[in-house]
Length: 426
Image 1 (tube, rainbow, N blue to C red):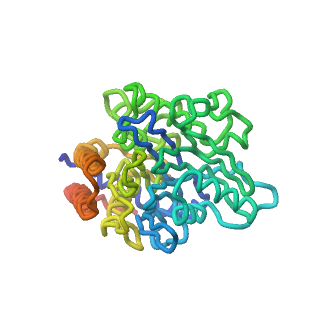
Image 2 (tube, rainbow, N blue to C red):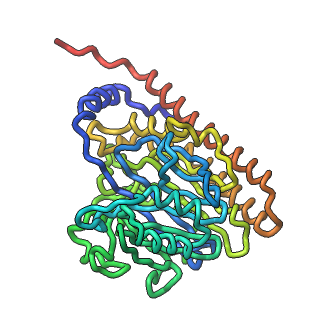
Image 3 (cartoon, helix red, strand yellow):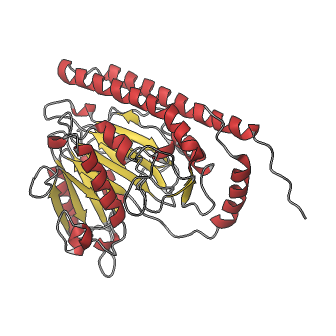
């Protein structure tokens, strides 16, 4: 691996970053999500994807969620279990969300909020229909939700609920009238609040916040669909790591871009993978009749373009590399790599390191995907051994951690090899 960390630049940026930090107080929300029917996936299993963006909860972890009808694993804010931001339970029910403030009502609302509702759903819901019943019940008792909830289950269910404090609207990803391409994409607006159709056209989205990411995600999924069927690998790599400009064109040298070199400084204001992306997950469901515990949450802690996808199954355990009250270790390494390559305004990335990181990390990720998918297919036909599932989960996290530790060590060594910054002149 080539020397890639520019110490002088990083020193200057770090100084400026410390100065700027105290002035940045606005909460950012830029989550991008998709629900994909098993009718259009390569193996017939549904997919659910979310890139989570926030400026106030940088440190995430994967945690076991207990205390309900079903046990679950979920991505949470480090050290906090009362709310979850995406997860899967042992019944194979998966849920994620994107914030949609246009669903708010005058006078505000009380009751469980976005993350609390998802925790309740993981603890009590087996199917998409169960989640709809939960929303019907809380329509009466009250919610403080403003969210688009994407859900899949172990029985073929796949859809999205645009959910306000007292109402919701369901969009079925299996219905060709609702999802003609077999998927439903959302960013941070609700079609019901905007009084537009389930699949809005670009001209209907002018002046709407996050419409650029919505259109970019649709284009990315369409490019995956050009091979007729969408694969788990494509969503993990091509959707979660998208780097497109403000017109929706992927930058040359990026995973979706044309051959070439990335720009030296890359703004992430309009990309799906942003400097504010704190985690991402792609849920790989099961076919009806398969063991729901084979449902897999592929989690990327930290900024996905600096991280690696790791599989976790809803079997009641999480590997140490993913869980810690101060943030899962794999994610903390990704945060360090991102911070060392971020501009002072926190909106752009110095891309010098990215190609080498991808060259090192993505082959490991490919191996984890291939081995896990092969094992999952074998277990689906021959029967599930939970001991084998746990062992695969442990080995995958171990390999992912080794890959990330290698990146951290090489970044430090490259930094130390650079000449020390010149002393300031007075």
